Length: 489
Image 1: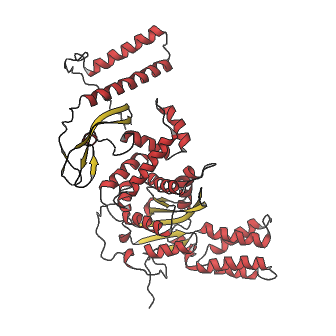
Image 2: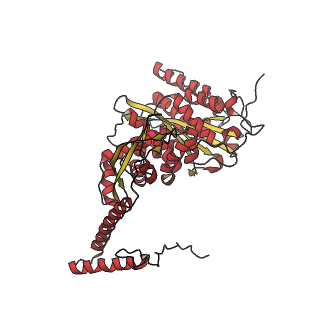
Image 3: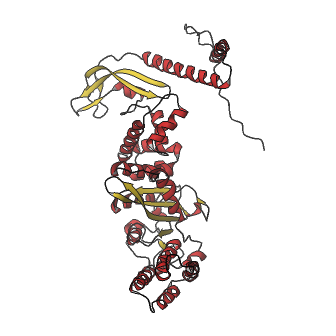
């Protein structure tokens, strides 16, 4: 099988003959002439090493880009000063201010453009027709291409570090404050999107057909804020069952993260489920750590879901009890953990509860409280701890997908040494990071802009016998092959 070769872009070989100084040369000939001239200058200076050649070419390219940018803008026809139709109401709006200058930083250099400001008295809206003609950003001092690059840096490191790293890749410096302003501006744009469903569909397209099954895992992660100290950011992962590779990875997951209240988290998670056509999915698995609000959320959003208590959390809670009974550093703690794993990896936690109750003899008040807490935890989650049955059905019993999300969605960017977040900027970054990890670096910036103009799509029809999760509030009572509840009479 032959290797695929990349297509080379060739310069135009036809001379334009437009009367300019170099008009008699084609693009290909002009490039060769420029290369020869650069080589002559380097030889004259005695600088023929590769670093010097690269620096010279980069400098010449930058100067050429700025000159070409300025010349292109200057070549545009002058604005005639007549009234222009308002983009909002369509009424003719006269010129209010002439030749207002705007500076925009682009990848080719700084752009300086002079344009007229029009104001519509009817709808009280001001606009610049030349900005729309050039497709300049509505606000800010950077172009779309520059904003995309700045945003990618900001999503992956502290703002001061971004400014230092930027200098390595680009010849013009950028302040850390500019990185902050771009993030704030994009976050406001995200909040102005058509809907959260539109954001989810732009970040990761909805499947053409409903997936065979879905896995949902939700948990909390603590972030340090300036105003309130440690605050919980709620995180959830929604992934199609066929995209889960056991003990390895997940493919195309959707991440939801909110630094706020439960209602905000519910709305964001519902949008992710809508994007995955969850109304038509016949089997949904919901993994949680045992927190009551987690199961309440599962009941509200996916009443037919198979609820599973994360196996690792079940063991960790048992270890807290074991340390209270045996001591923090007792040599028998590994044996305690092994025995707990054997007992709860069954059809129910009843055997584990019986042995825990045997430990109440001669126990102190503190030890009795620890046993009581663990037994209550297991009894409240008995139906969610049928691990042997879940394994036999091929279902995951560990919430590793959301534990991993804590690390690479939030902690990698927001929990570095010495970081403290304002609540507002923390809320922005949490939501942007979740969207960034869902969409990927290439699609992220485009997805936010797309969600501003495109309403959410509904490319499917709900199955007549589908669960219709949003229209019921049933509590699952027994595990079935399709994840449906058997209603008790």
